[in-house]
Length: 307
Image (cartoon, rainbow, N blue to C red; front, side, top):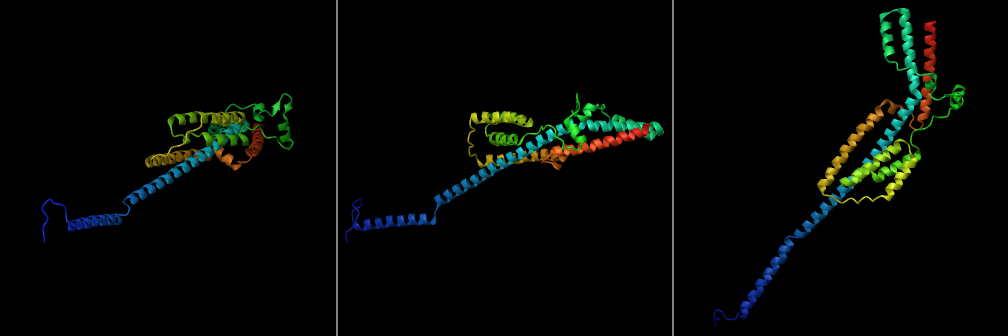
């Protein structure tokens, strides 16, 4: 058997050995690929899962934004109703309350003068300190008496005929609808950039002022203005940290609004308004009748004391 010279061409036996080594390497590579299925697959799966989680988080943020806007609309609507009802309550019933305070002071003073008792004198001083300037008859009936005497509304009340409700100062149903649509479209909380948020805040301030006055015509004009203005930019997907921060801000904002809503509901006017949310005018009529009856009782009591 001969031996090949060093450096000479490989023999057939050596070629076969080299082929076997290449085949073994290929098999090992295939086996390694099988033993590690999916280093890429795992990474791709993790990426897809992360994207799905961020999409769910973004969806939760958008839902929270819309819920907050609806809550703000409800709170603002109730605030306007309370404010307008308070104004109407003061216009309609304020003079009657003042008249009752004056009669209470006169009764206490008449009793103190008759008895001379120190306790009665103290009560008389306290009652007088509570009195505002006594309204005249015209103020007491708040426009029910004109140059020709009793107005039609006053005459209707005194003769038990149906009484026309006072002029409404609350927004109409159409004004409420326009306000809600504008608030949903132009609400500042929908803005992601400071410039856009400032533009929306200025616009919503004008919307709130028009709604507070019940100015339906102005609300229509503002609707046209918004529709003609620049379209709001589409919101971009943010990082997960930004979405979490957004959720936290929305939660804090809702907490603040909840406090405002509770204060409104627990106020005296808010409590009265909740008693007759569908017909506050009827509630005012009932209170006015009760106050007029109390005025008559106090006047009779005072007349008996001063005789």
